[in-house]
Length: 242
Image (cartoon, rainbow, N blue to C red; front, side, top):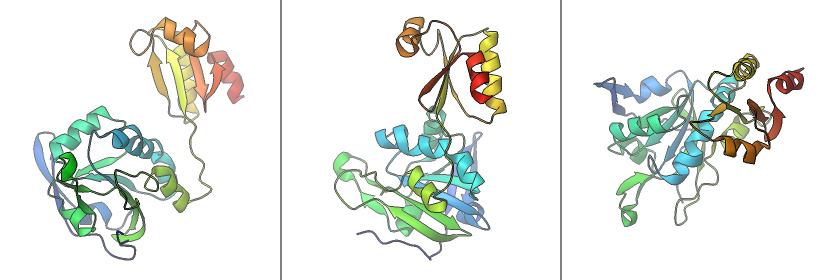
């Protein structure tokens, strides 16, 4: 079994990071001192679970974490900075700081550096999450030590429930639009005014008219969905909020 580091200080490490074509060093003191930080670590950038669920959900809940006292969300992986930067460009990661632990120094100090040589990964991080307050580990969620890549307890929802079981999580919001549509602009403005983050699906770029009909049953835009419920167009959206 892996040992929890709750009550201990995080390892003292300096991470070389490539930013704007320059090398920048960021230390664990800079990341953790005087702050409340959520850290989650995963086996590798671009891997399936990490890309489809682990990182995107932390990014999605970032505002809720902030509202509940978290200053920064950090994702650590034993990858080099160029891989992490490329991954960030392809992911919903604007609210998460991606830290490359290229040499595995931090991960080794946490006691969670594992050998994944059987799948050609070499030394990588075991999947875990932790809450760190002023450099001291408050709570760790370490995935069970069993074959494969278990993903049961290090997810964003489990961490948020630990911080505040009564935290109100944002509803998933999506809308279909098309370029030059004034009603679409009205709907997006209204959603933004209500503080809702939304995914925009643009006809002709992200989807076709056929897809719109198949999914929504309608042939006009915008079509708004909140929490899995179809709201309709801009007028229906205004009535929904009213």
